[in-house]
Length: 256
Image (cartoon, rainbow, N blue to C red; front, side):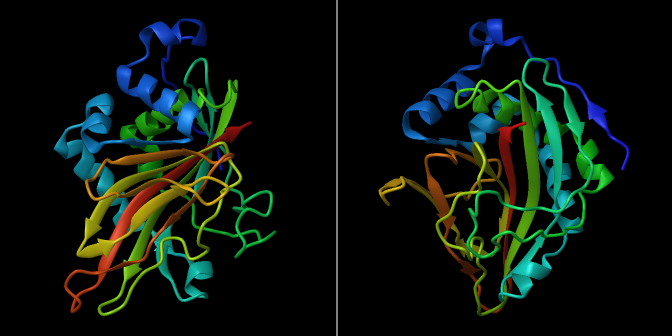
């Protein structure tokens, strides 16, 4: 794949603290002190400057995901794609990296230890969507509170977890886990006919730091993956006669 480069114009780190929006400052302080932060949908939408039309366009990318054969083999219906980017902290320059298999490092996922998982790549339309770039840029600003990295590797996973009629779907069949990265984020895109799906973040000793159900599109959950574990409870249909689904964008950042 040819490298695709998109640029942001972020302020230099030496002056960023004076120009940083309040929402970013709050998120950075919360992550640095507690390891977790929940950014409300209203704050995310205001920070990204997106209207309903922008969000509706972004959400349509979740109609073009592919089955996850690894989850299917374990009885979970999940659709996804996968891609990765480099993000330069000082300039905000974002560059798409060549497609590679996905592997979670440091034996962080007990279900897929040392397994290369091959997923369909992100679509060109998704990569080109300005809102994706804005989200990754926001995460880069926040992640600087955890590590003053000059360059980040951003791994991008649009997910849809499906619960069949009368059944349930498992967003995290591996249970409490780490992703082996610095920052892990979950942006709710949509929920349809879905109950459950409660996100929880824990300290290593098992103490619950935060528990919330992301139920408003654009809600953003952030956590320091080095110091916490996370999980999401099963979803099930509100109307048991119809299927349910939960769409999220999971993006992780780690030092390049």
